[in-house]
Image (cartoon, rainbow, N blue to C red; front, side):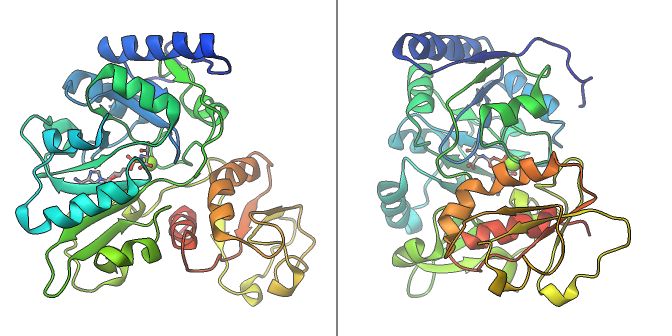
Length: 352
Ligand code: TXA
Ligand code: MG
C-alpha cells in the first residue's frame, strides 16, 4: 500500500572509518532485529533490506517502495550453506547448483529454487519458488552475518524507477520513507544480479536467465545450456517474470527516454531539447555528431567496454534525468556480456 511521502526522519549511517563502521553495523543489525527496513549497500545496487522471516517487516519494504505484492523479493543469505535452509535443491539439479554457488557466491548471481515453508508468502508473492543470493560486499556481509538470518531486499528505489548505485541515489527516492540508509559508497558492479533458474536438460542442464546481469552468458556456459527467457519461444509465460519483464521499469523520473536503434531514426522536434546517452562517445558510431545535443553523457569513453558501461549506467541515467531536457536519446550498446543487461534496461526504460 502506498504511504504518504516523507513521514519519518531518514538517518544516514557512515562507514568511512573503523569506529563509524562498527557503530553502523550495530545500528543496522538492531534495526533489522526490531523489524525495521534499512537501505544497505551491495556490490550490484543498494537494497532495501528487512528480516525475510518477519512478514510485518517485509510489508514495510513494499510500502516504502510502493511495490505491488505480486512482484517477489530476493533473499540474501549470510553463508553459502544457508541456501539449504531457505530453498529445496532438487536432486537432479543439485550438482549444478553446487557448482554455481561455489563459482559465483558471494556475488551477483541469484538462483530461483523451490522454497522451504519457513519463507513467508509475502516474500515470494505466494509462489512455490524463492530467489536467493549471497552478497559480495564487506559491509553487507558483516550486517547479514551478525543478523544471522536471511535478509529480503529488493533494489532500494521507488517501484519502476532507476535502481540506486549510491547512498545519495537512495536518499533522493526514499528520504522520509525509511529510517536508515547505510552509506557504503558507490556500488562496484552497478547493475542488478543475474537471475536464473536451472532445469534438468537432455544432455546438460538448462540455465534459464530470467534477468541478465553482471554474471554473463560466457561465464555460465560452462555449467549448462544458457537460454535467455525473452528470446525463447518455449518459455512459460507464467507470472511472475523477473523485474525487467515488467513493461515499464528502470525509468528516469522526470525525463522520457528513447532507445534509437539507428541514427537515421532521429528526427528532432522544433523547440525541444535533447540529451544523448552515448555508449563510447565515438563520432563514427553516428550519434554524437548527429545533432547539437544539449548534453552528451558517455558510458565508456574511448574504445568502449560493456562492463564499465554497466558500472556507470544507473549513475549516468540519474544525472541525465536531473538535467531538465525534454528527452533522453540512448544509443544502443553491444548485445554481448553485460551489454545484454544494459540493453534490457534501456528497452524497459523507454517510453512505449
Ligand atoms: O542485485 C540484485 O539482485 C539486487 C540486490 C539488492 O540484491 N536486488 C534486486 O531486487 O534487484 P529487485 O526486487 O529489484 O529484483 C528482484 C526480482 C523481482 O522483481 C522478481 O521479478 C524476481 O527478482 N524474483 C524474485 N523472486 C522470484 C521468483 N521466485 N521467481 C522468479 N523471479 C523472482
Ligand atoms: Mg528493482
